[in-house]
Amino acid sequence: MVRVALTGSLRRTLVLQLLAVAGIVALVLFWAIRVTADKAAEAAQDAVLGAATQALADGIRVEEAGVDLDLAPITFSMLSAMGEDRVFYRVDFNALPMTGYADLPPPGAAPGSAPLFYSARYRGQDLRLAAVTRRLLVDGTSLPARVILGQTRLGQKAIADSIAGRAALLGVAFFVLAVPLSLLAARAILGPVGR
Image 1 (cartoon, rainbow, N blue to C red):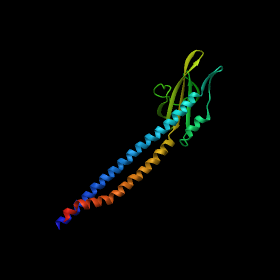
Image 2: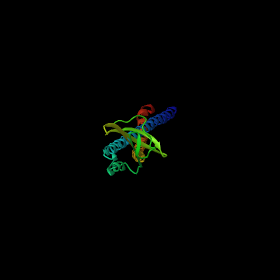
Image 3: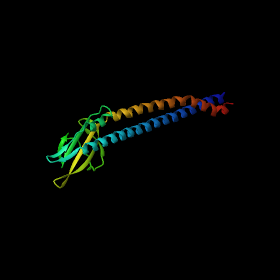
Image 4: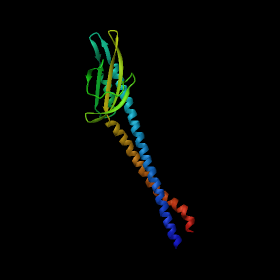
């Protein structure tokens, strides 16, 4: 009789340990997928944001009357593919605001011809921003034109949340599947002890 009680106690302990391991694995799986989803969504937003920033910078031209900026609708339509995010831009020429939101946060470092990505809070919202600098020849002098383009992160968050929701379901399914498997494993391992 003592052997049966000992086997029941061992079985319960073994099942609980197996379920604890399954729970930890499910949580690690969820966390890993969530982090990967956040990084993937940010990389996708950066690619679109970088292309739009470059397109906006390409619209800056030197003409006889001065510097002109072509705000092509295609530039902003690229960003609308990410969802219902708000878009903010700023164009400076020779360190003076030319158009856009003059108080849009600048990057911490001077951007070059390739987009420099950074994040900042602006008007109470989290933004992902890209900045590029383009040199323009005006009257024989090379002058900088800086373009900053920012987008709220609602679309990025929606994509990451959707993937994380699927990851949570996968983690729960893994844990639910682990319950009967833990019971079977405990029975198989402790079967010889009970005989």
